[in-house]
Amino acid sequence: MKKNSSGLCAFTPHPTPACCIMMRRQFSITLLTRYVNVKAALTAVAPCPVFLSLDRFARHPGARRLDLEADALQILREPNAGGNSIVSEALSMQYMHELLGAFDVVTEMRIKYWSENWKKVDYLCSLAPDCRIAVSVTRAMKFPDPAAWTASDAMHLLKKKLFGLVVARAGVCKAQRYTKSILHIWCQTDAIAASIASVYEDVVTELGITENVVLVATVAATESCIFFDDPSIFE
Image (tube, rainbow, N blue to C red; front, top):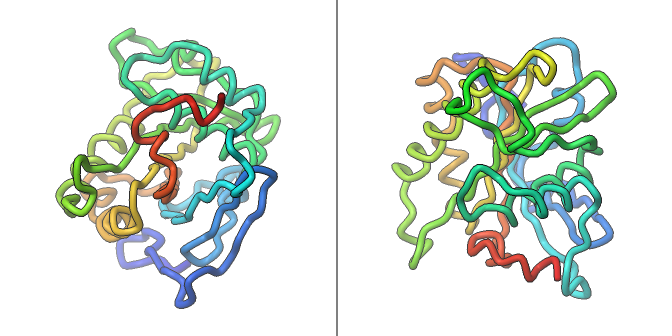
């Protein structure tokens, strides 16, 4: 992973179709960028640079439904701040548990801010006993035609979500304070994910974000339940 002139870690797709496949009991994650140890970057005491990790989610053919571990199930069952996004948020926590060993979730409505109207993250979780991170989950999608997605759509989404992520950190209560954050982006198609990757450096530069934010863009082209918020994937 190389830094560009602004100090950001540049998006560097691997020259081969897949450089790493991580098999889990119910699904696999295929890494589409050069391997970066995301967990090490987030758990290190030192600040981490801003970077993007791009991967693809694929449910195993025999997994007709997905079983959630306790933290992801808690997100599924508890109310959030509104919006039809409970499936993407619960599955995000399952992803973080399986890939990063995340545990001890604090759901959206249990996170305390200095003002009730403050920008919010979707959940907090721990990667180590002394390492809490915040996760904001979003979906990059276009209906009725995903091919109509543009770079402008990507920039608008990233500006909105990254701005909210940074503001939320400034307003969280002392007992739940954290330093590093993940923006987890479920992407409807490969092309949408590529557009996210192509513009994120410009967006973080414009917003003045220089460290402690990791973007994870996960292509889930075969999982319409994420984009339609259909909980039947868990039933």
